[in-house]
Amino acid sequence: MIVTLSGEISEKLQELVVLEAGGIGYGLFVTVEDYGQLKQGDTAKLYVYEHIRESAYDLYGFVSPDTKALFEQLLSVNGVGPRMALNMLSIGSSSEVKHAIAGGDTKFIQAANGVGKRVAERVVVDLKDKVGLLSSASTDSLFVSNAAAQQDEAVQALVSLGYTPADALAALDGIKPDLPAEDRIKQALKGRA
Image (cartoon, rainbow, N blue to C red; front, top):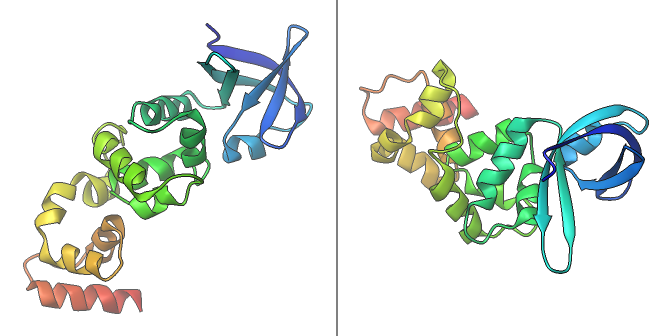
């Protein structure tokens, strides 16, 4: 089992990087973010995920062990293979992807190549409570309180107007929760203008 590879980035091909380690050039599929970060000629350490099939032996490399962990969580979702998981991690930073999952933002996840509505919904349902967001005042109000948000008429109204659940919570942040839902919605819409 290959856990990490360290060596020189000898080439950057269309969708992968070649890492020279011990006289062997390993081709690793990487996220768009990691691809931009890795420079040809630099020494790098990549955390590796091996995907072995009868017809192929693919290596996926990650600069951060946290990104690799999120990749493996995505693979646990029914219908998500390594290429699709990598595509999801390539639409933004791993932090942005985690926030989209925790916030129920299926439209963000659907922006990944090959990801349809059903798969995006499955990713949110399966991983929403598993992405391990650190608690902070902003993430608590935006992402941890989703159960309460589903009961909030103002949030539901904003979502029906095209907001993501996370954006609806953000728009309502700072508006007194004891106001009637109609007034809270008006104030949230004024704040966006």
